[in-house]
Image 1 (tube, rainbow, N blue to C red):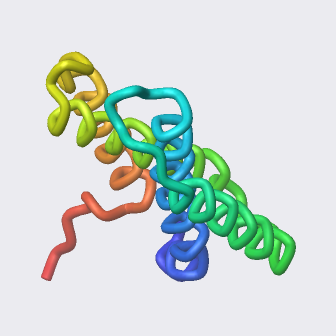
Image 2: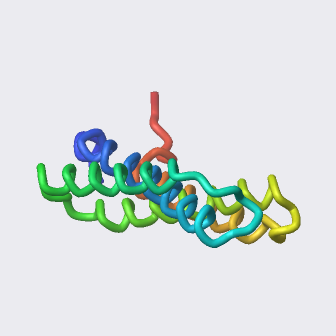
Length: 120
């Protein structure tokens, strides 16, 4: 992806991360006994999905953006899973979600061109 294309798609990528966070939060609130019930993750997930859909309808995604956006979604999912497992150790180890999150973050930064070295 080019730098101008990256700046134009930044909103989509951030919304993808927020949607992943809120989606896993909704599933955790509804189906986990460790986390108390709250309606706010469900509302946040619905609003994030709506905003992501509106962004998609406003302008189509460029080539290569859907793969990076789905990786950002999974960064949100696995990042929140690692955070919850660190907060509630009885849920299990957070090593696997954390390693998946870091691997996806490195891949996203590589695809976005953040890790490129510039000659100054």
